[in-house]
Image 1 (tube, one colour):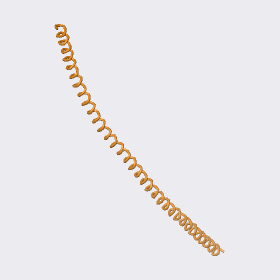
Image 2 (tube, rainbow, N blue to C red):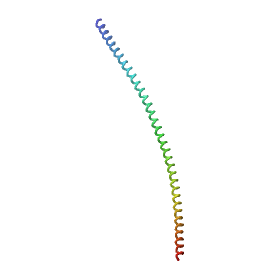
Image 3 (cartoon, rainbow, N blue to C red):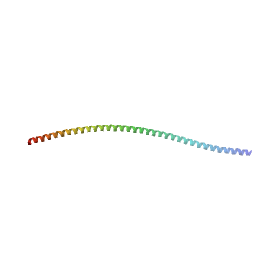
Image 4 (spheres, rainbow, N blue to C red):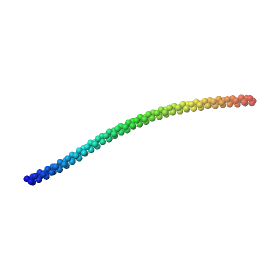
Length: 123
């Protein structure tokens, strides 16, 4: 009987120790589950921020492309306007050159007439 009582006592002590160990394991598991949930929450928030940043980058790239397109259009329009003005200046220069030639020809004619008149007076 004493042997059975001792065995029962030993088994009860082992059971108590296992119960304490199981409680400690449950507490550790609960902490790990809590930490995992916190990590998952942090990961979800980080993924959300990453998605927001990614979207902002995409929108920024679109804005940059639109701005570049607008700048290219303005540059093209400015170049076309400049070409038009250069054509106007070239036409004005040709007209001025033609007028100068006419004036020079007329002046040359007057000089020739004056020389001829002086020769006529001298003779």
